[in-house]
Length: 249
Length: 239
Image 1 (cartoon, rainbow over the protein chains, first blue to last red):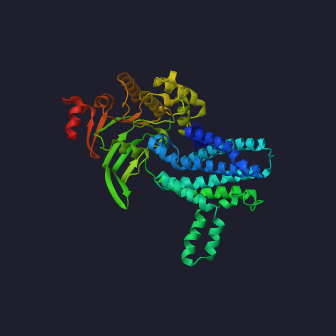
Image 2 (cartoon, chains in turn blue, brown):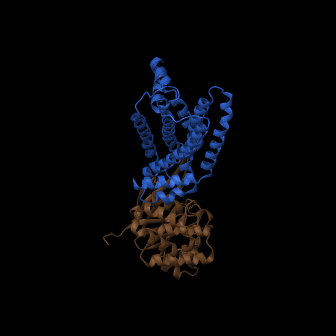
Image 3 (spheres, rainbow over the protein chains, first blue to last red):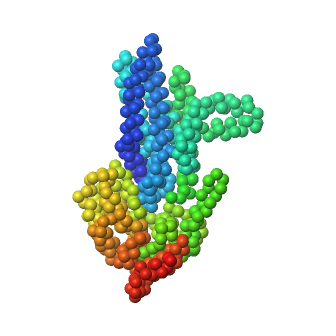
């Protein structure tokens, strides 16, 4: 565990200093500020529009950064051969994979928190007052990014192409919002069509679980949010580890 | 010390690379039927033309590649130091931070860490530059940090892939002296280099790889008595 923590903290330091991270946070800041123009269009619902747009944007930016990081981080270390100096030490491949993943997730959390602080400042300037659902919506957005990144990390190990892994993870993120519909189709479809849909319903993450924007209250207890994220991510990371152990450099 | 002697051993090792593209698999030779034993305390040189399998041999020893057939017997990785050709570090770290990172991964005790880092930085002549970002370093300085991380945890086996590549003549001499000191301390050195004169000065025995096969093993006394030295024997073998 010591190695995992060390790799995670080094990865987090690396990401915080990367131009991509700084630029994405700066871009998000500018874009969130620009969203004020959007709010003007919704005369009566200005705060509501700013609230929803901001949270959605934070999630998308977090997702973009996380997917980019998840699909490139190991390939980049393989290309630069930085990985040689780590894996030729008493560090297991599983420790390496988990450490890099957690480092990325820490960095993504930091960037999303920064964006949320800016978003809250804009909302406060428009007269909005703090409510609990904001924290829950933010947590939900982060956990969505977290589970999708675990899937992306597996895909990055499975595929040698960062682009393929990124696109597949983005498809997983999209389909993850339609899991109830996919499950409904499994019940209604013919046996032939139901089988691949059923398989898909087990592969893609249940992102609807974390979607607070479409409903008034939580459908599942908060502990299940964390338990689901931990279980789903663990499955993909364990599968990723078994592939990574066979990888040659 | 309760440590038992060890050796690096390759027993009939073959490594074939396979690449699949659009359903078609192509195979290329890495190493063919390599049998070699390097006992503890020996300085062993690996010579060969480009693509002869030197780096593949090292990667097999370090577990970065798996042998297609045969056995590679390697000591515990905590007892191995490795300097790759053109080492690459996290550019945002300083040499001191970098060495602390690798020291921790190697299991170096925290209480001994700071003193050991200063010792190896001094050995490679980088004490004064220890707090500069690695991203600002020249190729030669990065190579020195590479050597520092390879010897940081005081390993018994040190594998050096082209250690003097990109170094200026003064740095090459300092590197050679340092490797000589490690040799005197009883460390096992395995060195690959295109510089025959460096290998000649440092090694007890040399293996010549030709097209993935160990074409010849040359002990020190053999090149000492050869009229054209190691260079002549090498050329004769690879031609």
